[in-house]
Length: 420
Image 1: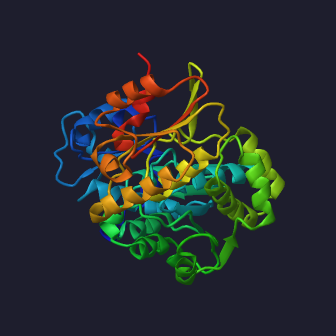
Image 2: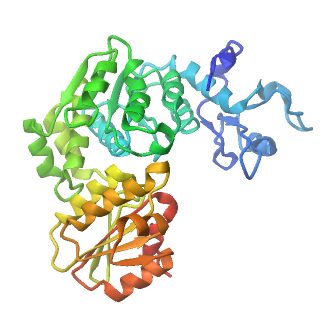
Image 3: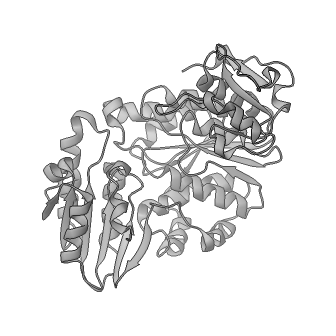
């Protein structure tokens, strides 16, 4: 993906709007409305509605016929609005005074992003960060264009499932700092090997400015490869650091697991470079909470459910299982594990790897949902649908038990907890 052909806009373009959206229902006065063609609808059909809601201007295709009632002077025309969106965000980012922190990784990047934002706020900075998982070629430009001009920090998450996507996002965001949470096997269908994934994620570090910095954990499977790729000095953190023990104590209930301690250490490594103290970071954890679907604790008739259904890959699945198995439990531990997507030809092998680890842990029962989980994980009970899994839990779960729900988001295991 390239933005160069869209890099030239008339002088004063960036002064014509404040904030942006590609959802006409979310337009606020003064915003840029970006008309995107989707699978179900064409955003160009809602340009008039966006202007009626107060949009200052709209980004539209060059060949789009302006309908009656729409002022053509308020249209910014480009050949491709998706790429034009990235280009205008790229131009806007160069006007910001904020230090930009880019975060990527196979697993844990959203946690690292949320922790980094919380720690930088604890240091007194005004922080704008990626909302939820808006980390692709639409979400990142949206985050950049909605960054307040007086923000001190812009923290952006960068996701990828095809080669070359990180380079495109880095070109837009131009990060001053780069953090990599982990290198696992998520999206390995498109990268073939972990080294291929490391090369893609490492693009973030390779394109850092010389006066910037990278943060890596010593425990990262591809630490040496990533450190070698970095164009900026590398701040190394580790579970062996003294600060890790203090984070582990602080996170024990709110965000348990050694992998989350490492996520906190990576965020702290960044905050520390910007002058934030360890104590301020620890204090920030008092009110810290992850977005929904990430280790959400729900109580139902005496049974505790851990909803970790936001997404799953082999790395995050095993980390969740290990953390779950170590939780205090008055009753039994039951794991409901569903299919993991985008693993390509290694899907059977990687599901089997998760299954071996699951069966080695102190779990009373493993319920699988979906064909891939059934074949690879080989649990105690196989379900084809979420409804079947709900019925299985109704038969087996008792007060005092804890239940882990974990699968790729598209499996919709969170629906097990929906009432009514």
